[in-house]
Length: 82
Image (cartoon, rainbow, N blue to C red):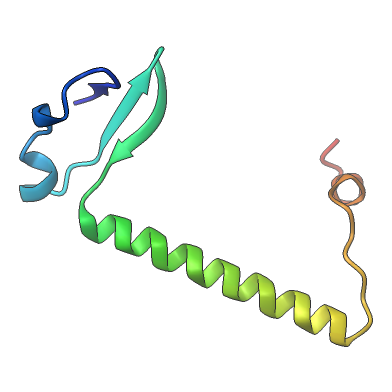
């Protein structure tokens, strides 16, 4: 099931709550958002916090070693992504 962005919110199905369904919301055929169960949302939030924490720790370790960040444009070349 997919909801259009202009559909009224009271049309949200019980499936999200009772079955854990994930419902994409589309605008002009493109997914712009999603309605997910609260547990999924909490997990995504925790994953974001963990990623930020890991990134900050990595940056602190690099600074402590005197390393400088590599610009994304240079990293792309090094990884042969261009």
